[in-house]
Length: 152
Image 1 (cartoon, rainbow, N blue to C red):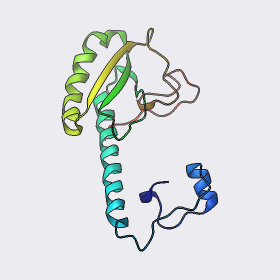
Image 2 (cartoon, helix red, strand yellow):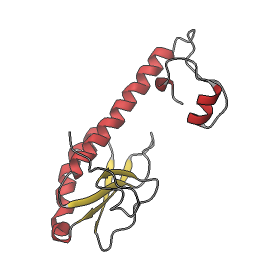
Image 3 (cartoon, helix red, strand yellow):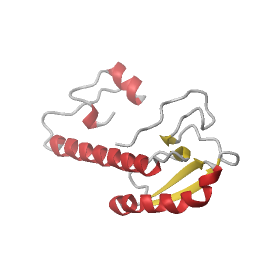
Image 4 (cartoon, rainbow, N blue to C red):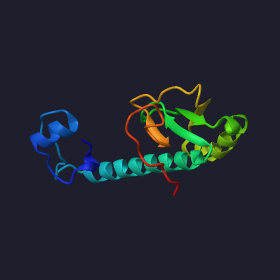
């Protein structure tokens, strides 16, 4: 559980189910850092959500069947691995197009996006721990379908 996710103390049951631990957590009223830390976590959450929004917008092309980040985003991670499965007809131009669309996001967030483009025939199955940005989980080699993400 993270400080910004709670408004008060968390019960043992809630902490165990949400964080896998059976201890009581919550912000302390007498700690002067509670408010600044809460603001820091809110800011980081907004930054993370903005990064995901921009990545989703970049891959929001009808020629792209699926796009996902290979691993969860960590706070120290400066390189993201983005896998894209595309139509055969778009394979020749999709890489430079996505690199152009991702350039501003890379600069804004000081990251490098390593892009791996595949056709549907040679595309890998999406790993279970991947973060789906565009497409359907079912199309990525898994059973359940989700709705296609819409750019904002």
